[in-house]
Length: 250
Image (cartoon, rainbow, N blue to C red; front, side):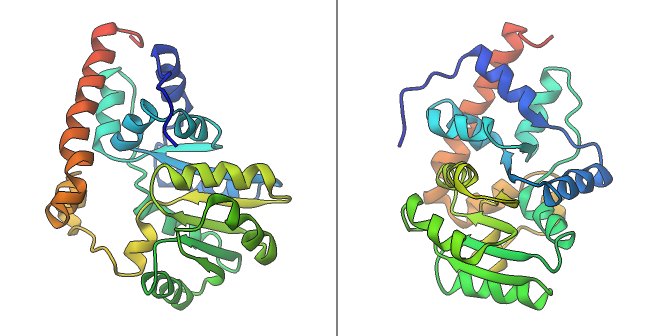
């Protein structure tokens, strides 16, 4: 549920400081290994330009990001933001590319997939099973948040991949974190289950390398993604320019 925005300069600075900027693949491995060996439940979230915008209109989502254990930079927009405020942005930690990196370190662990719809959910589970992963739970993304807790408690996954989009997945991640006993890694994965299940096609490698995968996605679904990518990117750019003009971080 959206609430009245309370995001201000102080919160924006806190959010920027919250992001863990990853220098290289080895550093990413250290973060993922730390998460997988934690004695408590931890949440890994990703922030892109869209997430930055959502923080400005949805307090619960903003709180969920701030209560994540790791927030990782995703996309050219957030890279530009850090460059504008004279910070080294580190490598792009796009969830669709880096969650498989995490799972490669978690072979043998119990994995839950929560999100999307059938038949794509089962197709994603089959894909990961062929990769050697132990899928112990699949659940579509349209239950109420409270309904997922007993499913997770019953199956006791070590890793939970959420793929139901912002802000629901982030709200669910902190809801579960606050109620689960014992170690578990909860990852806010966005569209990754859709990719694994062949519901969504990824952009060609060269498109991803130059950082314009969002253009590819927009061309595939222009009506659904117009507000997010066209209007949203304009709003994001205005906010980045505002940060620079205010010189809050220089």
